Length: 227
Length: 214
Image 1 (cartoon, rainbow over the protein chains, first blue to last red):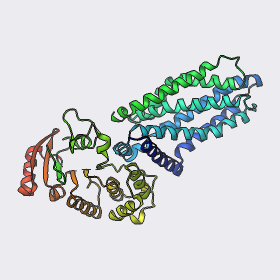
Image 2: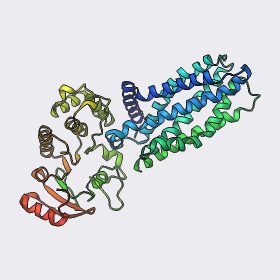
Image 3: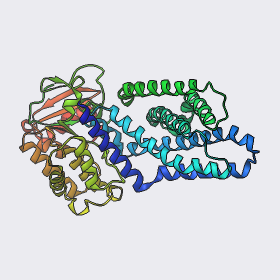
Image 4: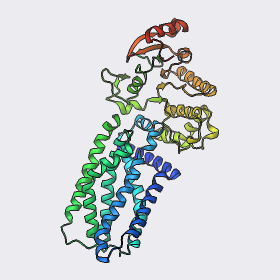
């Protein structure tokens, strides 16, 4: 299968994902409502002194994004289960990894929208200034989200094969993304200017994690579909 | 067993006989525990990508997306199968299955019969040379059954190879060149339906399959 054909199929699958999601907006709306509720809850519940806010805010942001993400991932393969559409996709003459890649890109797109709305709100609600290193902050968000979504999409496909998929997914995913969460939180904290160096290791962890969990699911997805 | 190009094969068997599993193996959806499926000299497991292009599957499930319209579903599958002149093909096939007037309606609002007709269109959008059907008459009204029979006749006349799984003797035997009875994952009987009467076939089935699935 040529690279052009592969990219064409990726485009077709993304077109289908986007059209289906934005017609019903079931996944996006639940992710947004959940994250806005968390922002509001933390805003009311936590009254932090200025010097503490910066220490705690990265953790609060990433916890919110993690659970909003899991909410979206849980529904990621639901549309494919209805009418057994996944079999329809498997029958198509394309490399099956393209299905996984399209789902990952779609999940990242949804997370990007959630982050675009939620993250600025955290700074407003906690009355915290914009990060002094916005590039580093942006890199933490992009890499953290990518690593989370690539492993999350794979586990979502795995969990969707089970009847208790929605319960299984968080149990599977949280232990696996601990390195991602720790690294992303530390990089975010660093972007606030609250670390005294030595944060390159977290960038390296995210990069290595990203590479491993990009290659592994692409190789294993075909076998996963046979389960 | 061998199926010649253009042959129409009907497969019967009681529940749990392995009919749907056989179809999944033929469609490269499942791997066989033993044996091989060879299509035009190529093993389906080894050349699945190329051979899948030539296979169309109609199952109990429609493989259709409820939020997309009938036209969007066909466009989606047509693009996945790299169908040339897709717009015209979509119009033609929607007309063939009698859904042209509801082409822009979301599939979620369709009745079971309409969904099954659209599923037929979906399976044939890329003009496959091998059509696999798993109990396609389930839930169809008389009009939809008529459309399916017409399409099956056209497929048979245009030398498409058809493998039909059904519990319906009348529908299955009417058009088939070869009839099989599957019990416990094995073909226990095979015949040319024209060589014996429907009643004789029914009696043989009852003897071999114990009456299950009728």
